[in-house]
Length: 287
Image (cartoon, rainbow, N blue to C red; front, side, top):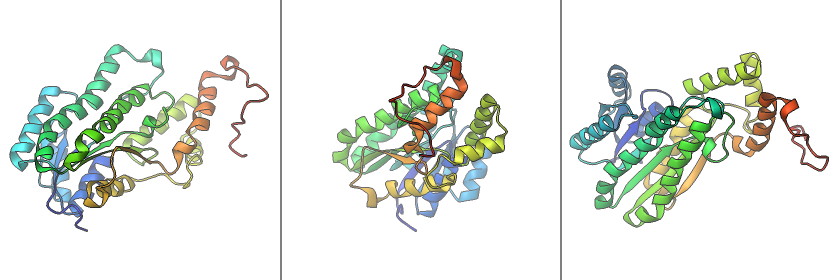
């Protein structure tokens, strides 16, 4: 595999999960890859494990750290052809439990970091008339998910940035894409499963079986599933595609309206949920 030979990539939040898998796949495809991580020791270990070109350290929520790290990458690499923007997820919770500080933190971590990196790397892409801007978000940008207000809103802003940029940068050979994964086996997924199981008073194994039952392919995804799509979108083969949101979810977004309504009914409680009119569409998943 050498679809990315001669290209330079920067992958953020690259020490575990989706970010690590994408960085590893980019290396396998021949790219010179730089990792951005928050923990120096863990990031250095990831570089050694996958054979990446180097790394920089920054907290994505810290604007000054991120700007310095980006300057360092450009100093080491000269330019970046491919940006894979990836972040951890903000905390879940009911809307009224989320403070203004929670919203500000989520915006800094998810949207501001995408904005800063895009502004820093785009000029060289325009000059070289080739580039790939890939943003890893969540299926919540397609259909908002229960209790994930911070993620739904801030990641949707990132998706809007990518789609808004597409017609402006397309004439320079630069494409933009949004990857919208769901139910990928990562630490974040496991944390959310435990959180939701606790909210519903279910044993974790029972909750996982129910969650998997909402997937058309009847299995959870892996970071490698996301990395495979990212490698294609970063390649010349995908040069005629841009401005697209790509669900990587095993068919989950087709079930989200039903899943969300049933889930919300269970959390809010039937006594506080309006009764369904007789002519309403059934949400029985067995039909």
